[in-house]
Length: 248
Image 1 (cartoon, rainbow, N blue to C red):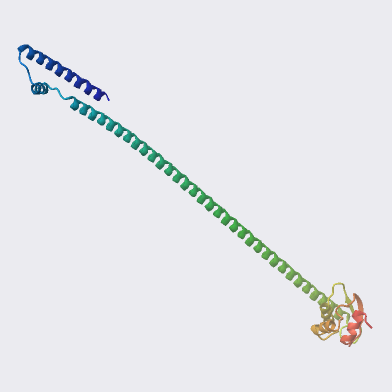
Image 2 (image 1 turned 180 degrees about the vertical axis):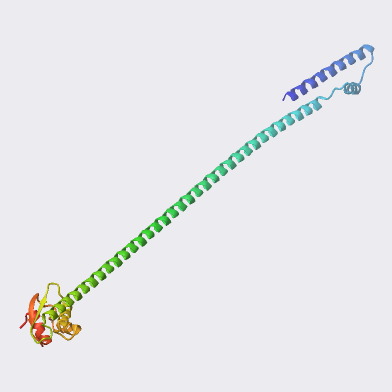
């Protein structure tokens, strides 16, 4: 705007000088007694740098248009700058939102991965505990079975040893196979099989399994009594069974 004011000032100064020169020239012409025509006056004014008022107005209008255009350009530039700033701000906001969304997805994925790992670890721990419990249960069952088997073997060995001792005592007393009555003892805890074994050892029955089967088939195995019995020589299975069960 300062350039426009300076231009007006210089132009006005030029016009003033030209007018002054024209006036002086006219005065000098009048003084010399010579009359100038309008064309000569205008030609002389043009030579002195003077311009028509219409030209001045046209120039001033052009200056005003130029100033308006400059103002419009300035406004357009400011608007473009504002648009660029808004676009940059929008772009920054979008980038920030995208980063936040990406960070949220990564955090969610990390949490899901951690939860999956913890679940897998819990399942593996549970499976290990169940496997350990199964192994301990199996070991306990095997130990119990071994103990029961050992106890059965020891009981069997004890019965066989007892039968052998009774057989030896009977032989020493001279009652076995001598045609005399034989004293036979049944103790608490004796089974039909153990009784049959000792009777066989004393020579009173012909077979352990045969006499045990006879007792079981005829119901004598559940009625064997505890005590000392006299078995006559040559007694059959039925007689012996009735004696040891106290059945008439």
